[in-house]
Amino acid sequence: MSIRRILIANRGEIAARILRTCRELHIETVLAVSMADRLSVPAALADRTVCIGPARASESYLNAAAIVQAALGTHADAIHPGYGFLSERPALAQLCEAHGLVFIGPTAAQIEAVADKVRARSAAQHAGVPVAAGATVVSVEAAILAAREIGTPLLVKAIGGGGGRGMKRVDRLEDLPAALELAAAEAEAAFGDARVFLERFIPRARHVEVQIFGDGTGNVVHMGERDCSVQRRYQKLLEESPAPGLSDDCRRQLHAAAIRFAQRLSYRGAGTVEFLVDQQRDVFYFIEMNARIQVEHPVTEAVTGLDLIAEQIAIAGGAGLSFAQSDIQSHGCAVECRVNAEDPANNFAPSPGVTREAVWPNGEGIRVDTHIASGSSVPPFYDSLLGKIIAHGPDRKAALQRLRSAIAAVRIVGVRTNLSLHAMMLADPEFQVGGVDTGYVERLLERDPKFNETRKNG
Amino acid sequence: MTLTAAEVAEILRLVEGSAFDELSLELDGLKLNFKRSADGTNNIEQRDNASAPAMPAPAPAAAAAPAARRVAAAAAGPNLLDVRSPMLGIFYRAPKPGEPPYVAVGAAVEENTIVGIIEVMKLMNTVRAGVRGTVAEIPAVDGALVEYDEVLLRIRKPD
Image 1 (cartoon, helix red, strand yellow):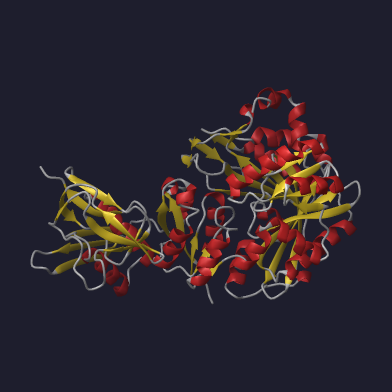
Image 2 (tube, rainbow over the protein chains, first blue to last red; image 1 turned 30 degrees about the horizontal axis):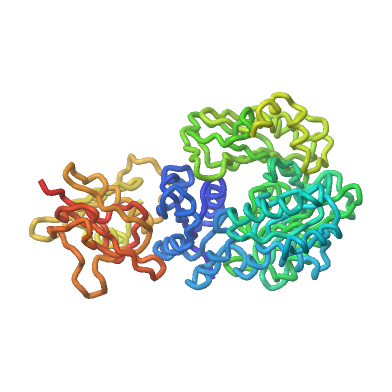
């Protein structure tokens, strides 16, 4: 079917991003907003807004019934869930399927298949995709036996969700029972699912993910990889494509593994298959699949010239894939930094408020995805992402140079930002060489007394 | 921009279902004035406003409801209390189609009096007045989508 009106069930920069593509495609937009977002920039950009509930996300952006009712009541054909919130909860996809609405994303069954990390691991193994040694936890006694087999260090991870919540590192076997208990409690609180599993910890690994698109009938293409190793507490801070310093062989194998995994699910729409790359051994392991558009998708858009939101809408509307693998070319290098409302001098605590002034950079090869203008509100109820600055250049050096200049041109008054950390990274020789591992940011912060003073207390 | 006859009819349907006698609607480049006469006939005036800046026009059907709602919000008086929608859903004034409404303008209500139903995905949620008084206005349209916090009724407090 042809999609003519889309209800956007999200907020922030991704709502503004989806609105932009809808406008270009002449698709009408309805933006579902909470009470806290009625005066936001995306609300002004949408053809219509409907208030779905109070500020608290559990009563608004996570309220699937209100969102589906809002779509039906405004005669929308489709719902775009963005990322986070309901994007990876089977409930919204199921409700859409039951009420004749197009869910711009995978099927509910596919969301379920990858949401359960143990099921996803097993699917990866069946697809011939390597996973790190691991075991499901049925009892503490059995877990100790399994942990002996796997060896330390190892991770206790939540089965029902990611993002570092419900995840504990265990260096000594005697610490395992306590870690299991803590991880299960965290997982229960975060995902309503206390189940955990064990996985071998890969030291000094890099986080490399592959963007894929499937048409739902088994055709899957990849759009190259993104290196997201620059993380703090499992939150990505900076992403780039291509991943620097990978061997061509490793890169090709990553792409092929991601395609095999998605093909096995007959995956529909945009997805990202995440891997840990062990550089010392030149091997990689499947971590999980994210069944949605990702925050860092502009990096891929910059190097491929594609509009990933438009492709999502086309596939959801039944148009299938508009290109073959051979049509996708990657040009140059793109780097994205996430600008968060966080206070670097206070252990990166969230810094909500009002941006009395917000000036974003522009220029050759610079793109900014944001919902923040002068006078915008940064409510305390949601994540702290203010915007993303994406720099594209003919090579990595040029892209980094453009990003450095762009960051220097940002002016945000009223809330604190993590821009000083980005500036420090971009000036750091280790980062400039490229190929840092996921422990890089923590080491960088330890080195710098400016960040080090307060973070020990946090 | 101009409105088609069907779009004007849609706006009028919304206004007629409300308790208002007058509507002044300003869209980009367009002004629409509507006044209900004492004898029940309606007067409509639509004119293009050439001096208005050319902006991308929102979808007409999408623009009508919020505009009417803004007018409603501006009409609240000092003795009037808003009964706001506790959730997004479809508002019904009567328990079933064809049955008399729970309350009409002029009806006396207690805190516990049911004044309408909000349907969310086939679940019916009753809305109570929450205050004692007389129903002064019913801005919400029977069978239409109401947003969270939208004004459903206005109750005049007893003096």
